[in-house]
Image 1 (tube, rainbow, N blue to C red):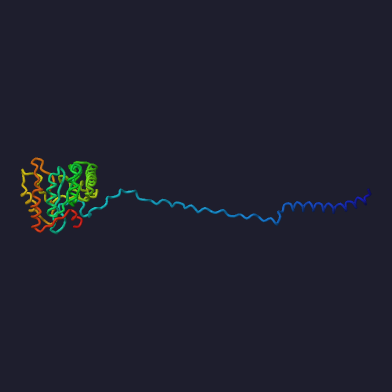
Image 2 (cartoon, one colour; image 1 turned 90 degrees about the vertical axis):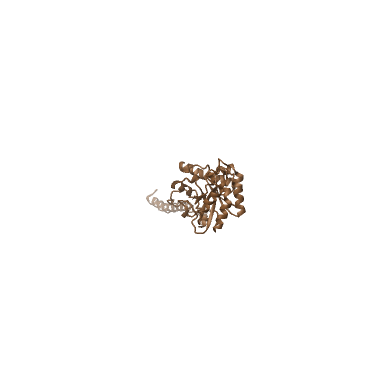
Length: 285
């Protein structure tokens, strides 16, 4: 082929190659571009869970303390063994201790009923267990019950735990047998106490109650008569007087001098202008 023909072929081939290259490039580009008519799928947001509250930092709390007993009496009555009702009114509280036996209960309840008087009876736990009928009769007569310990021991000779048990066990026994809560009145057996035992009594919801005068009828006929017992009580009469008597008979002579003297005591005090109350008058004094 001549040089002139070779040059003509080369000039004709260049445009063809350019067209081919451009066609291939366009095809490749079209294959990579997604169709404009196909919409992108919409995404529905999933529901969000409620945020979980985070616990606040723990506050510094005080150490737990024992729950104190309910206050059943004015604080002014605590820390002492009361010997009278603090009042200027001419009132007297007749109180009866019940421990050894119940021999005088019928006579005492009759005298009180005949005169329309309500009194306060200090019962031991042993007494209500041994004499449940007498204990219930006291309640049926409308009288006030109080705590005189479980077994009538000398409390200062016991440990603090034993003292608490004496008081608590008696309270449970009295309420179980009679249905009546003896709080808030407690009398120490033998009147034997000290500041520590009084504090324990108060901590258990009781006020300690002693007496203004002990009739001494419990000592029996070897030392007293019904008349001398009555005169002992009448001779010490004063506003707020607390009289101590007993429901049991003397173990040596079986006498019940307190029951025998009671009608004369009641009549004599009334003659002096006194009215009769239970120890609940302490709460109103």
